[in-house]
Image 1 (cartoon, rainbow, N blue to C red):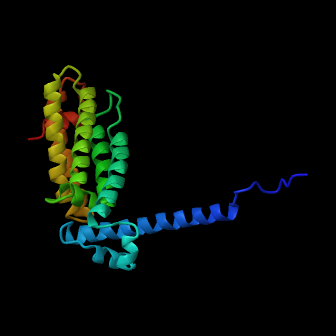
Image 2: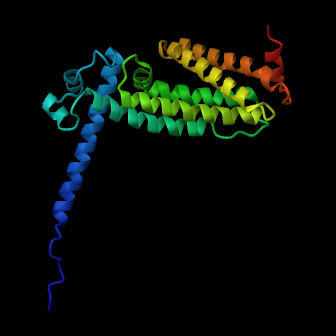
Image 3: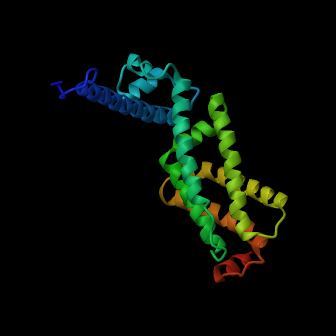
Length: 229
């Protein structure tokens, strides 16, 4: 009678060892990326080095090179992961809204989600807005910006249904520029002062958008904003 206990070529123990090695490798990569984020934020991308990243991670440079050949590869992997998470963030922040939603609420929700992401991942701002980011990250940033712009346009169209597409696009560009300019101030402060800058961004956006959506039924808060000097 044939032996049914094990098929030839099967090695359960070997498969388990492989899975453990893969899990250790993923943990090491995560450790190196976290260290790289810290170094990039502290020194900027240009001044950062693989030695500094390895030191921050508590490993030898040789260990780092087992996973990444150079600093640019680390930055690209980190940027790819952050872009993926950012896409999920703006998918939630810029989802379609009920036309009856007050403008202040829609703006506040979107700004809060984006600011929360930037607070948790300040390196995203460093990599995406630095003067010498790697080409792959620059390409990702351009693609992200284009997609983000289209989502802002879609959100604005909920409040401005009869506005020409060219005007919607122009308004979306201004909204993104205002947010990006304010974000640098937000990330440069802590505590109550940071919260105050977040509120300033919301106020600027609402006051800019309010006259453009004036054909919507005004809420009491919207009316007060419009009458504020």
